[in-house]
Image 1 (cartoon, helix red, strand yellow):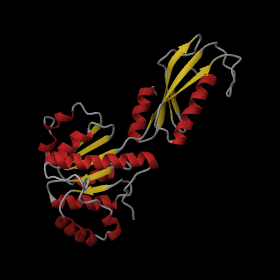
Image 2 (cartoon, rainbow, N blue to C red; image 1 turned 45 degrees about the vertical axis):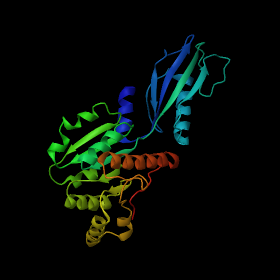
Image 3 (tube, rainbow, N blue to C red; image 1 turned 45 degrees about the horizontal axis):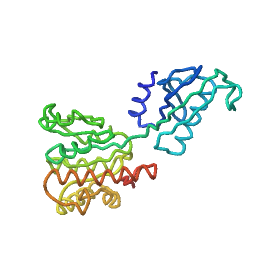
Length: 278
């Protein structure tokens, strides 16, 4: 597999890795600048030259993975019979500088309901490196023309057009996905909350709406047999409590800012915050 394919596969499978690049090569180096190697905890694709050089590169990459590092690192390796070797002699006579770039598992967000608020939220989130899932049962909300505002997205945008039973998408979401329920239909919203509570792989779950709506949902979810502690883990209202307003753009900024804080906490803890747990 080529290194580009490996990077795409790791992102799709939500597995961390490190991209190692020959940043500079002097003398008789085995590979020229630009050669690349992708390393995970138990596999590697591509090559930066083999031998001691590649073994050192792989060892350093796995140390970065084990430490949960997020910053890139440079390392210079001499290819001389007078240089110390940990993995056999490699005496080409040159010197290679390696750039190690961590490939972290990016956050994932699913927005159920791409109405006025949902689309504004998608526009904000699309400016960040994450996997963004947009789900709606109304075909007109997910037309190519309406989503053209996301054409320059940094995020990987996944569009789910599901005219019936959008709650089935919940089971297909990647592990740790943060779910936001904001559809046009309260019956659809409660079905989505029910599906999210039955799932074991999600991150946080948030619901847009009033206190009255949540009171009715709490009773309905209790009737469905959900433990009150799990129901209480659903966040409502969503967004930052100090950033208030009813305009779609204001709500979107508030919700996005709250999510970005959660992503930052995940990077520190190395895990998912706000998981809905039994």
